[in-house]
Amino acid sequence: MPTVPSILGFGAIAIDDIVYVDQPLSAGKGKVLHSARSFGGNVATALAAVARLGGSAGFVGWLGSAADDAVLRDLVASGVETEFAPRHPDARPVRSRITVGSDGERFIAYDDDAMLGTASDFPDEVLSRATVLIVDSYATRSLDVVARARDLGLAILGDIEWSCGPATERLIALCDHLILPLGFGRTATGRRSPAEMLDALWSPSRSAVVLTDGGRGVYYRGREETGLWHLPPHRVVVVDSTGAGDCFHGAYAHALMRGADTAGRVAFAAAAAALSIAGRGGREALPTDDQVTELLASTNAPSAVELKNAYVDTGT
Figure 1: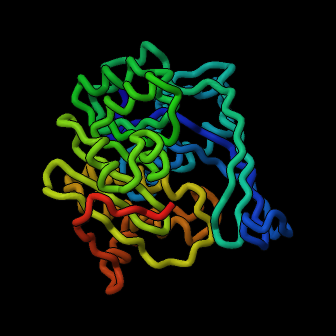
Figure 2 (figure 1 turned 135 degrees about the horizontal axis):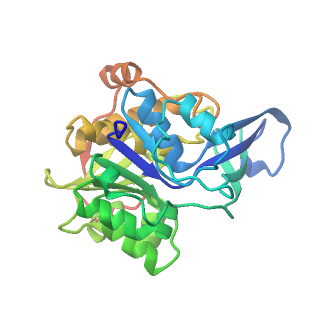
């Protein structure tokens, strides 16, 4: 058997048609400055980020069976292993149309009527040779595979952005590294403050709970640390925030593989995500390990502060 990558993932894989306009999205309309087609998707971009950082990544979700499939070729070009991905002639990517405003914020319209998840009989022999499995909200379609991976000892890193009900609740329970956008954390818990959300999402089986909040930074809790923490954002010029969260997940997984503690994983991931928004597209600006290390060593790199007040509100 070929070497199995240390970090595997299955979930959304997408082709994005991106339009950049000269006004913020709140203006309601604006002039087109630039348009581009890009490959994206939560898990696919996270794995591309791992590869860009020098890690070993493999996509194991459904792929088309044609040898010249554009999505397959892009993954390979991005350094992501596809040898172990199941194939099906009807598999196709999610198609997204993304509008990016002058402030870097974006609106994503997507069609996800596609084969997502992975084969129900995905082999334990492959899973058992990996260390981390990255999944997104679409992993509800392959919960048994996620459960088997957890039983085999893999760290399950969950990028969950929306819920489809009880299946999502089970998926969240399977994730020992749970990384959510703060907005979904509020929806999932019914709480308002980051501290309350972190506590509500915590369980004895968790290794870490992380809430990302864009320009407000990151809130987190880890098993090896006491307290709840807030890491303020890096101050960078925002060009395009597309794929920043996916880059965060990939960089977090890479730092996890290297043995970093929760604070180290979050700091590394936040720096990688900050660098990714300085360029256009979901993958074009994915950083290298050296670039992340340099940003972390800069004099203005933020430091985490403990959340003293459990009722601190984000104001949104």
